[in-house]
Length: 329
Image 1 (cartoon, one colour):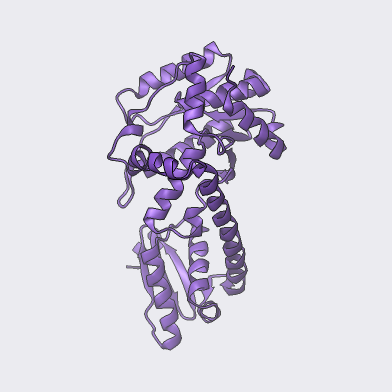
Image 2 (cartoon, rainbow, N blue to C red):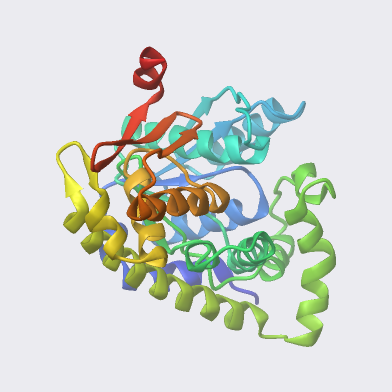
């Protein structure tokens, strides 16, 4: 008789992360799809329904969103798992995709639901094939180690621990078990929409990779782990450089230039990330170019960002939020 592959993966994860396994209350992001359904049933087997809180985020992006939420509520009642739901509104900012905005809103809503329900950790049902897709998407974007590290097994976001115990499971084995057990799960039509690059990778590219390398999930997962280790080293060095360059009001340009172009790039990205700013590769390269030119006598240094601007003030590099920069102009 088939056993739930999510249960074996969850037990392995719990042994490696006892702080999560021993939490008084554990949240679980529950969409009603195959992956989160298998994970919810595994978590119920491990810890019992009353230690869990199934957390559902309703983006309202599809006509069937309310039906999906109703299914999730019914499923949880039937399996003795307390259920909580939050509706969110998605507003697409310039330069961002609906998918990106929905993901950010989902994490924020899950963190808020977790706090409301007294959960110190939230389990996510992303699995090994999701990990492979994330790495391939990053590769096609030309990402460096940070992007190629794909999804971590655990992370802290909005002051809540998010964990992914299914990264060594595959989509097919989870669905095979659910079908064998006659467990109903939802199928999100967006997952098969060829308008999304991830959907095309799943439908067209992964079957080819699986024929070429049957153990692709393990080998590509190992690449992600190696990139994650390299990224940790880069960030540790960038943090040291940032401490060396930091002044109360900004970054010391002379000290920053000493690091050289590649290290300056990482320092600037970290510095701005700590201020809630995302710096893409093109803007990073332009900012590094301007910083290095100050060592050749250039006086002007300014880069506009969506939520503010980076400018030179004497010997310092400063970030001015949009309100400050608008008032100045």
